[in-house]
Length: 219
Image 1 (cartoon, rainbow, N blue to C red):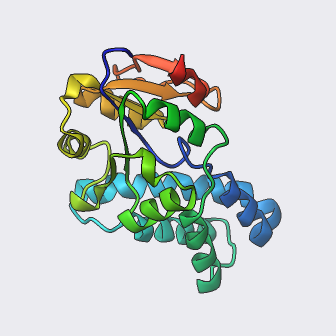
Image 2: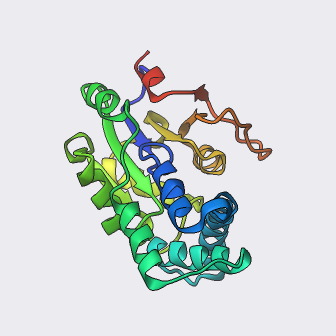
């Protein structure tokens, strides 16, 4: 870690807690909400990958809305414009995990920091501003400028271009195992934030470090 000049973070699930979305889904769908949430997240990821492969990019907000509509259809649940607008608004004001502000403030003293996300820039910037994190990041980077989603290698290149730091001096942090594998394949040092005691992917690109809390970055 002492050799690193920059640390790049994924956004959702890494810095920003998405559990409030599950709570809101429960408000609308009750007992069906866990299965709707699981399908929503699964299709959200699938649609980013499929649209990239098909070269038919749409912003993450559109992908997310389409995935929610699919999940509601799959589980025979009501889908209305009011529900969609509410859920998408909540994406923009997700709260950061409790340790995030303090950890980033301390890391900022010795490292360049950036966030690199599949989210639209508006969605991403809104969450950053809502949690008063703008001052800690040298760059807030959305895949919108590339019209492709992670884990396409050229997306990770955006961090190098934005920070003007060579690849070997950058560490990438994410809770998403597929994202960690993508960043490692690209050539970043990788830190897997294993918040939920899960397992890594079988893709031959294991993380360089595994942590269970962002606070471990400080040690």
